[in-house]
Length: 216
Image 1 (cartoon, rainbow, N blue to C red):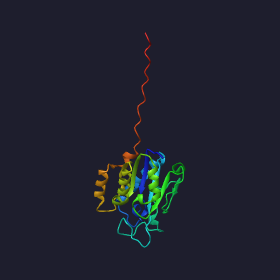
Image 2: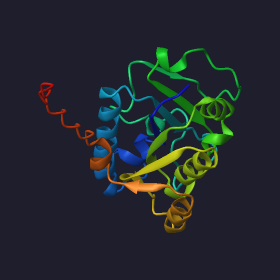
Image 3: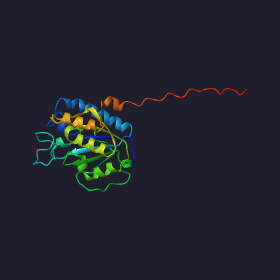
Image 4: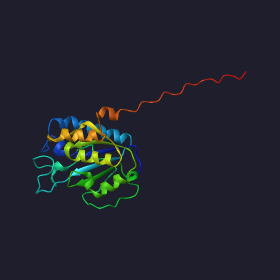
């Protein structure tokens, strides 16, 4: 499978981006607005979307912040509105390697649920990404020092170009976020504002008609 562009959203869930979430912060409002812009861009341009959803067992605290978050069975684990396409397939938590044929012909969005932040711990996700040919991943979501850096570095290791939408990610107050950004930049990850990502490509000027000079 070959795609020029792929949108990857990491943990775009209510607990981080909705005002009723267990770890909602003011920066989440702007980040969510930019995430919606990226999804609109993907929908209009038929760009495939890979989404991850963190599902924490009820007896666990969770890996991202020091309050309960993304707990199974709660509204906080749900994806944000407008980040779920009609044409989608959710592979759930089952960690197997089988994938249907022509996956992105049937669905524009593939959702992986996971217990851990690293997308590459999900065997199906690992296989799907491995079967993709070179292209550019555009990343948004929550957890700069966790799932986002793990995805970005893993994708670079596998030969993909990676762009992080700088105003569509949350660091969740993690003190390791600045170091995670430096690590990504050292691996060749670009940080670009959403406005530049969704900006239409400039049209090439039409060639001017030149009348042929009659032969003498």
